[in-house]
Image 1 (cartoon, one colour):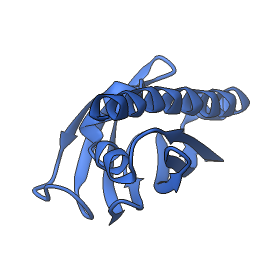
Image 2: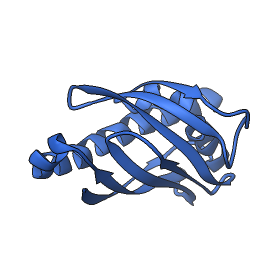
Image 3: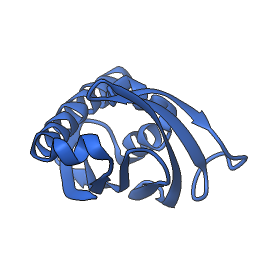
Image 4: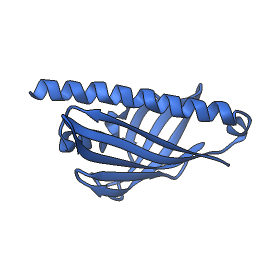
Length: 152
């Protein structure tokens, strides 16, 4: 199993609670996280710690499902989720802090990739994953900045 660490952030123009509420609803993920095709809630817990989800994803041309659960939820400062299935395992922590003109949104995620494909493409996968997360956060910034300008 290969491991790498993703640390990406952006300052968005909206308040912490708006950024937090948008990002803690994984049904929004397909709008900014291009590899997510759709999200299904798998538990009876409506929101917060213990809520389980399944996402249909596409990465490097391969489709797969990832199951994950919310493991920490401290509105509007932080939430954490952990995957339990899929070829790419991670525990992602999202932090929201006040910043000039808005909120700094930061994701910290140790990622473990498994399987022959990832063992063979290790350095390329590492480069791809870091680059694609930067692009996803650029998408997130555009969406949250637009939300802020509509609310102003």
